[in-house]
Amino acid sequence: RFSPGTQWSPGLLAPAPVPTIAVRMLTNLKHAFEARKQRERLLETLTLLLAVMPDHPGELRARAELLSELGASRAALADYRRCLEVAPEAEGRAALAARVHALEARLGASS
Image (cartoon, rainbow, N blue to C red; front, side, top):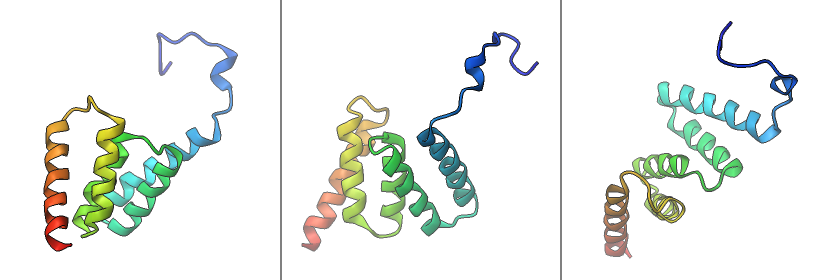
């Protein structure tokens, strides 16, 4: 009824793997914390998501942006670099590279 093109099979009732459930729950929390502007809790949630999916470019970028907003430039730089490394063909690559260069320049000036 909800998906008319889907054929029934017993496999549709197979239990979901624990990491899949964890990602779904953490993603729901992420959206809730974003909506409520609870940045510290959002950061904790993004960190947990990356513990389950360490090379997810979208979550790396999201955490890098949040870390940058919070003034954690070195941690943001590490996440931006990792994002570029794991997603060399990522959309917006030029903007990511520009952020890396800006943070490197800022941190180089403060060293």
